[in-house]
Image (cartoon, rainbow, N blue to C red):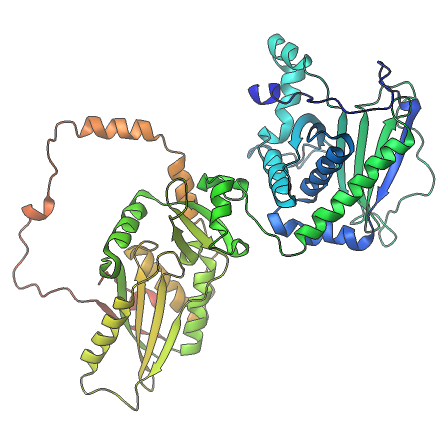
Length: 514
């Protein structure tokens, strides 16, 4: 309710004659605005990629800019329409219904200055509308008496905007149905009141965007609305040109789990190419601890892990391709971590595409005298290289050919993105893919776990553990209470044999930390 109460009509639009009465349909006029096919194509297919927008976002941004130039008001309130068939509630199934569940609700939009700021501001305002506006009508007409009265006191928006979408996908000269040349006749009585002072309706037909600006002739002269239409066309052309000439940016609604503000995202853009970013979200508590140690310890990072595998009958090319494919299908394997220039906690950044470093060496003709020592030294060098925790991938592969069908694989990776159990699953997937067996579809990801964590009641959890541990005055150091068994050799980096022709489950029995 507070959200809708804050969406009043704002400043009144200028007009030629404020006659003090409502405008009637019979007194209405219309000005048309048409974008050519090239500009329409750019609006629908190219421009949205710049800021991850929809055509409706850009059309409204252009309207805000046009009205600002036309009226000298940088803020407007627009009544938007929704058809109600989009996903509003996760458990609402409208697949067996016909027609639209029309919603009408006010939205306040402001001209934010340059093109990038304007588009971002309009997009975020639209994404912040609760339940796509359906609640306004519910409260306005079905709410309590107090709610209905409070919303009825708000001035109605003077601009009504409705973008109907593309009509050339299923209707046209090459389709079963096409638009008739005859007029459909009036859809409303001539004495019916018009909605708002300006009614703007848009659709795409025959590859061109058509916008209709309806108005009351008692309120506006034709030239006045034609001037607004000219401003609108100029604003749309400017925004489309801006978006199609290398502009790019993320907004908070693109990465909702992160909680980052627009200023944080703009600062990230100084060091990251945001075009290649798939998602951003916080670290889990365990990851936060690992990041702390990685930054504190530097080259002595204890969380750089390593696995050594002796492989038989493996095709190096297929293994490399399989490792890349498995990394492509799991977001956590394409993740880096950022913490600088943020107003809050560190974040993990998922990149759309990263190339796994895969180095191949052939030792057949220059095998060292002490093979084990040479492999151990190579493993030590790989570990010493460490990782730049901010730049994925946080893993690399070195495959050394020892003889005709025998290889030694060194997989070096950081513990912050994969644990021991996941390591086994990852290697199993790689070997399964390399052997030509299809992998099952990915079910869930680390993002889901972060979302689950954010849904937990932290205050309740903290209260529980404080009560449970209230009787303890000092930490319980388990390491000091255990006596290690005698004659246990010092643990070495994990080494296992795997044969290309054997079962993956038998080949990968145990993977452990170095």
